[in-house]
Image 1: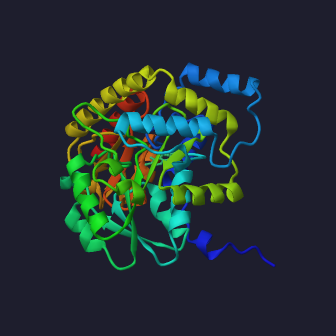
Image 2 (image 1 turned 60 degrees about the vertical axis):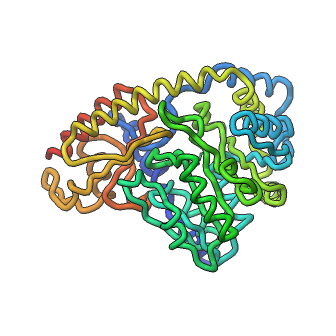
Length: 397
Ligand code: PMP
Ligand code: GLU
């Protein structure tokens, strides 16, 4: 029998963020200098005390299977940290530790969605959301937001997208790819619609600690009473503690959902890495100065990126309240040749920028909007300076 891939997987788009970063890595391995603004991962190394905790965990023999949904100590520490930061109490049994926040998005979709259910996703959205929804047979309903609204969904747009099949709203604040952040009031207005229509919410809050001065983060379940019973909050250590390779994420959710996700993991992945779980406890419970230090660096880079975007004719971006991405409008620069190559869309634009200038970025089409590209500024100032000089030169060509 010839190998035939299932229809569901044939329809799955591979992750464009991962694809662009793999391409950049390949070019680097081939000896090219690449200015890599593709992948969203902190360039800092994981703080020493966290690495030390991993070594100690190995030496103490924590090298075996753990409970599929995570060790009780880490669940306690996640619940405690959430309570301290946001004031809402979750029991450890409501925490499911996974192999990263991406895995948690899959878990939530897998345990909540049936074929035909609709999930409202404001665009621009992070590349994996629509695909992970589709994997369950459910339907992503993409609602376009506007740059002039800072790419935020409002209650009116949300209401207009609801049908009798709508099951869930998927929100990401601070946002990947735009960096935009919902205020507590804006979240409250969306929450009223959620309650009115009896919907569920996946709130991806992985950038909750990467918030720039003058902006205030609010966790979705805290903005109205009763939301915790209909929300899965997603977070993890990848971005906050520069731990992308350790693969630890989690959900805080109603107990029934947590149980279902635990069962799924027990069949699908077993426990997340035992050693990484102990390291995650050290990250959460240890000194938090490393988080502040990284934020200081990201703040400088953000200022630089905003300044450079302002200096280059015909491009713009919305205000970034958090995360480490600029979502840059290049609509005026499409539909013309660049050094003899015609460029009509963001995919061609990013591929040609890489080919002509060795700058790796991600095309807006991967995030559900045309006419933009995403630049991750989780990289050194030197790389950013060179990359933006090259982007400027490319656009002038
Ligand atoms: N959610 C968002 C919005 C992200 O940007 C990322 C980045 N990878 C993730 C989830 C997944 O993070 P991880 O799987 O590394 O924990
Ligand atoms: N979230 C990061 C990004 O968007 C990492 C890559 C990924 O997991 O998609 O670039």
